[in-house]
Image (tube, rainbow, N blue to C red; front, side, top):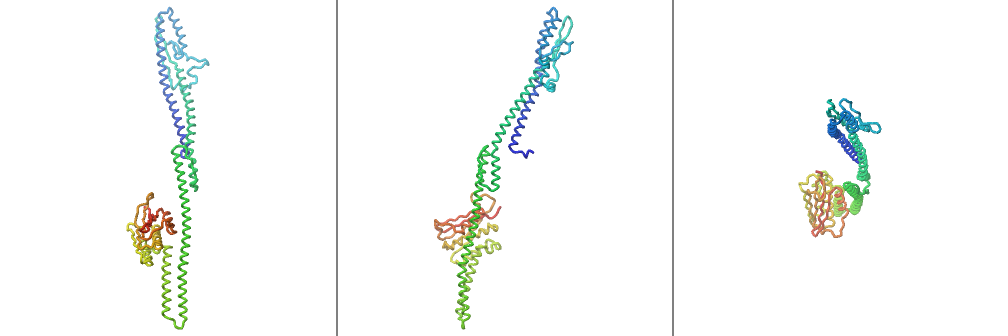
Length: 454
């Protein structure tokens, strides 16, 4: 049941229990102190009454009629409220009655309370001698007023304490309710965030701790909204880049395949005409055949480059080193005048299929840009393990991919092409970074690629 109570109900319930316990302890203290107070009152009244009676009794011998004088004294003593004085031969007199005919001890005081604080009366005897006869006066205490006073204190404590407890409880409920009011707003905001609504805002209120939580939740919602929007834009750019890449490949296929196929058709037609001639010239046949072989070779090279762009051949089967080696050999065949140096650290280890494909694409795109725009004569490629980028947390390994050329560099206002833009988006989606630095000695591309989780 306790687990089902809200925080506000728990606080109010605990406070009510504490206040009631405090009131109960205070009443219990009064009850425990009642007995000693009544006993002290008994002893005090009995002592005073004894001294008074001894003084009066001492004057009986001077009276002409001691017996009559004693009867007069006994009549006067019966008017005392806190003690009962009788002669030893008499039965104890009843307690004095109030105007309603009820004894003081019984007035509004429960019998059980009287028995608890005053189990029995305290009595003492004062010996007297009248005309040679020895007797005694018995003094008994009647602490009715003291008991009634204690009972009134207990009732007053209960009444006042109950009012105080109720007032404090009401005040606490109001204060706690206002202090914890932001929790409802926090709950609604979290529900909205869970449903995908990140434009929620909670006005910081309540205790400083809750106000701080409201502020942090507002910041969290704004950050999540920004991340989701960036993710949406990234997905849009990825789709756009894929479409543009398809268009580029289609254009290259049209631009490259068209001339080659046209040339092949021309040479094949010439061979057909030579075949129909009465005496074909061998030199012409060899010329057209050699041209066809050259065009086929160029088509094969172009097809390999297109296939490499679509999916690296041998990456999954042979690994990153062999795939990069094949890529280097492909570019060396088409550009033998450019020196390409590749260094892959032995400490890199297994990077995972996604990471290896990303590293391959970075190197491929960098080489494509170099051969298209840089007019470089030397390219250096290095891949090695690296520490995580500054500000990045997480238990992951990273690989630093660096491609440096000695070309003419980038223009100050030059923007990234589709290839580098798509590569940057891809690396950012994986949790890495990509930077491009241009100087007088060429361009350096550095990519931090997450490889594996430790």
